Amino acid sequence: MRVLIPLVYKDDRVLLKQVDGVWTPPTGEFSFSSEKELPQHASEITKLQAGVPSTFASLTEVRSLGEQEAYVVAVTTSVEDVGEGWQWRPLSLLPDALALPKESITNATRILTRVQKNANAVHPFQKQLQRIGAQYQAEANRFLNTLQSRQSTSLVEWPEYTELLKRMYVEAGKYGLQLLNVVKQADLSDEIKALLESLAEELSESQRQRLLELIEQYIAAGMTLEEALQKALTVFKNVNVYAAARTAPNFAFHHAATIVAIEESVDYAVYHTARDERVCPQCAPREGKVVRIDTSPYYENLPAIHPHCRCWMLFYTSLDEVREQEGEEVAPAEGVFS
Image (cartoon, rainbow, N blue to C red):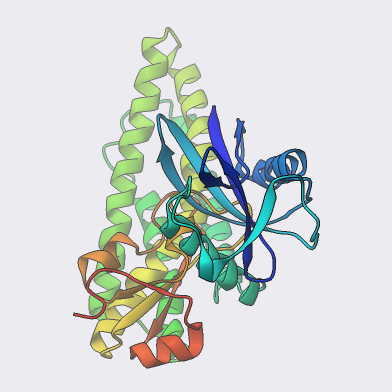
């Protein structure tokens, strides 16, 4: 069971209620199987406790609240009249005695502003990367189907599969160059191509090991080789290949863009999430974070940071350009001003 805290906003104000001398937002326990359920749960809590319906904007952070895990979300409402004891408090005059740290409200306000300003923004090469991933998935599944007929666990090498991954990484990397507006039809340098192919080889080996683990696991459970291979391949295609198709192109895209950014003296990048109810706890607090390229904070925040990550970076030559294009609602990471 988790705690859900909807911060309700209206006209530069946030909804709070004083409980035992502490100003508290609506709060309720909840459980869910998918982040898609957050909007429904948040609205139920704000209606029940404060008497106002709410429209979900974004998950803003996950933090510890006592011994419980608290999901903080930003929501909005058009309703002025609220339940007994609830008050609209100006964001510029927040009280000191808050149940939630003031920086959590400030951060949620910042993310809400960015979501409202950029509601329709999408990954600049979303369709192209999805196409590359889909092509890899189809070809990978065809190759894996041929392993079923071999009925052998001898997968010391699978160069055909490795080549599929290399091709996917290289094709996705070309769009990383275009992101920096270096070229329209990118021909990768030998350095970038070598890096991407090396990353593809690493993924290929980890996936090969995973498939072998699955086969061994099912044989240990009493299956025949044929049964174990069939089940392992089914699981591998549905989980590992599926995840790679939706994650690896974005991963390769950003690594190629990084090399070009360093070469072209592009100094800053800003993190963008998909800004919907599916944004995960890992990514949500990163929305609008400014990082200096080629630093530890940059690589810690470089998409894709987890399987199925849909986030992206946009690159800028100066902080003035960051503010001009992104607005003032950015959050500089450590080292940006050093």
